[in-house]
Image 1 (cartoon, rainbow, N blue to C red):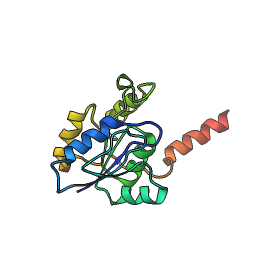
Image 2 (cartoon, rainbow, N blue to C red):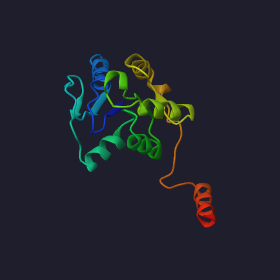
Image 3 (spheres, rainbow, N blue to C red):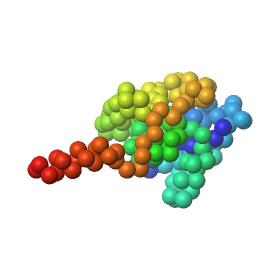
Image 4 (cartoon, one colour):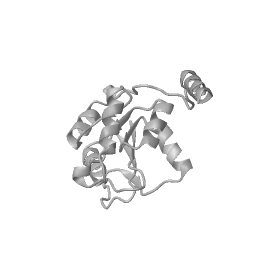
Length: 160
């Protein structure tokens, strides 16, 4: 099994990196690559890069069986377009990982609409990882807006 961990490039997310790295310490059967951003924590049990260029990011993404990510919309949308199972661990204001809880709100909304798997803490993330066959790609979306949305917008614009 191959896992790609993505935290984005704007803020560190040590809580996510530590959780995956600790789990990986006993998992020689799993290959994990992380894009760890500005993290001060340096993983010992997974391959990692602070940043990746687009080509290398896309290669890691497409070669992986499971994506683990913060609740960043870019990674979520890419997962949905490529039909990749994703586990989202939202950054939290209470841990000073962001200045608002918008990722928490995003994760809850997308989970409720059955788009993503959401772990609210490290323990729940590990629970998912211990049962990888149950981590499903929830839905697939196209690269472009649906015809019904396009039609709705077209009619709205014509009326206004």
